[in-house]
Image 1 (cartoon, rainbow, N blue to C red):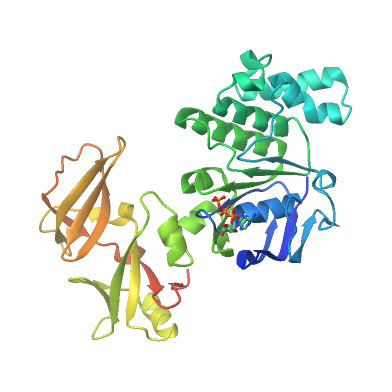
Image 2: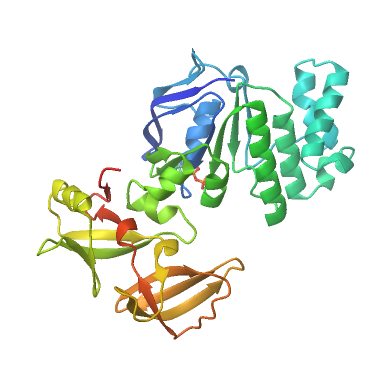
Length: 365
Ligand code: ATP
């Protein structure tokens, strides 16, 4: 296995800058997820690492080798793309075995590896079927199997689970992660699905408009989003973002709609150091907004706008003047649209952002 290094990569299509000077390093054995909305440049970055696109500038290293000028077949990578190229006239077995036979692997070893991959992907009963006799989800699993039987330096995967139904998707997600850890295979995995990214990645690279927005372990990116884009993209439901005013009359505080929330000295310092901006944005996660009994100190009355019953919890969307935000409750809570609830905002867990740059303003940890 090997690390992958990308250095100042630029890829343009005419006037469109798909990848805008991206530098990153995927460590040996790491499961790295490229996450971002459609069009952010994640597929182009992956395809360039694979050698399927040529960049205008920048370097790509796999291990110690600079691979810019190597053909895809010379880069020792296995990739699985959304649009899997299978051989429709061949059986599932022969499709999965294809790369092994191309490498002249002994027959007994081919049989062993194909059966092992098929067992993992729950495809053993289908090994003799032709590709055209399979559903698109089954075809996608064959494409995964074909990559899994190989032992390349690096796996590159572009939304490889999109055609699977919810249950199989969750199962295959767990299998892929398990196999990756077992084999220690350096993997780059592209998705626009933040749940998938959180579930699978050792680290996540969040991308937007051809640039890296933040890189880090899932919980770090979730708990300390670097800017408004990341805050709004990661999390289900996403973070609620609201305008806030900073003031220092008496105690330092943020005013969010009708609510004045005192803030720590450290956060006050950070806001002042950022340039004294009074107009800020504040982000809150639903799980940090506490629904409390009436009369609790600091509680605010809010009106229930809608309730989403998710089985294991409820997401309650509430309004307060012009503000609308979310809170989470246990599944037993009997809350209905139009009810009045009392909530406390999480003064210790507010995320503060500069509205001009979009960057997070943070007190040191
Ligand atoms: P998706 O999830 O929809 O695949 P993405 O984040 O992977 O999106 P890319 O496919 O990398 O994004 O595209 C990045 C930008 O480059 C987009 O604006 C896209 O329209 C543009 N682009 C990609 N491929 C081409 C191409 N062959 N010709 C012209 N523009 C392209």
